[in-house]
Structure formats: structure tokens, C-alpha cells
Amino acid sequence: MKVLVTGFDPFGGETMNPAIEAVNQLPATIAGATIVKLEIPTVFNRCATVVREAIVRERPAVVLSIGQAGGRAALTPELVAINLSDGRIPDNAGQQPVDQPIQTDGATAYFTQLPVKAMVAAIRAAGLPSTLSTTAGTYVCNHLMYQVQYLRSTEFPELRAGFMHIPFLPSQVTDRPNTPSLALADDVRGITAAITAIVQQTE
Image (cartoon, rainbow, N blue to C red; front, side, top):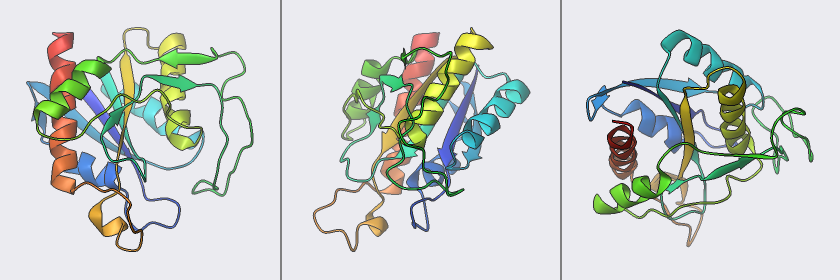
């Protein structure tokens, strides 16, 4: 079994993104599954193109995308993606869509195929904070989650896919009083626990 795990590059003036930092530190295999790591641009549309190319190349059984959610205090698997892009800030290519549908022929929303409640339980069992999220926002994270689900519905019906947000790193909150963060090693443990739950459910 092969799991494609994606992480965004830094955006919004940050010098690092915990998503790709954590993805890069994942082990090569988790619960017997081969882990394929992919850095993707924080850019509307382009991020989905890069992931589609990796799906065609690698033929994974699962795609798990990781993104930064500054201000959240827990690792949060996402339940649903909505057909809307609305950028609170420009992406890394300067694009800032306003109330724009992602796919004109796509569903209003897509639910993940991943066992999000089991993922939450596994992360908590590892001693880390985790909650189920029912909103992935309207920025590039939601955009990518939706686009991968659209690809699943139109091209890759056997694929299982989902998204998980992780908090800031401690170094990102030195000038953000009262903002939660999580150590990189804990991000890696949490993502590993989540993938273990995904693999166990799949098998």
C-alpha cells in the first residue's frame, strides 16, 4: 500500500511551514505502508496540478494532505471540503479569488473517505491534542482538499483522500502572544498516528 503525503511550502510571509517540515520528517514506511512525500506550492490551482501529476506517477491508494492552521491548538483532520475559493490573503502567486467556485461542474461539497474519527482517536492515544474539524476554510487548503476529491470523482474512483491541519510551530509564535503551537516532533508523531489509523482501517 502506498500513501502520498503532501505538505505546503511557506506562505503569508512565513519563512517555514510546519506542514512540509513535518512531512519531510515522516518515516519511509508507516504500519507497512510506503510513504511518498511531496512538497506543493501554496497556489490556487497549481497545487492541484502538482498533486494530480504525483497521483498519476505514484498510483497511491491514499492521499493525505497536510496544511498549517495558525491559531488552532490541535491536529485537526478535516471532514469536508466546499466548492469555494475565497482568499483572505493572496497566495504565493499573488492570486486572491473572491467567492469563486473551484469547479463549475463539481459538487457543492465532498466528504473525505478517510476514517477521521479513528484518526483523532489515534492522535489522542499518542498523547497529542486532536479534534475533528468540519471546516477547512476557503483558502488554498480547502481548495486542494476539494480538488483532490474532484479528481477522485472524475478520474481516480479507487482513491481515498483527505486533509489534516496542524498548528503553528513554536518558532512561529514568538511574536504572537497567546497563540497555540506544537513542536515539530509532535506533529510528526501525530501525522504518523493518523496514517497508522488510515492504513489499519484500509486493511
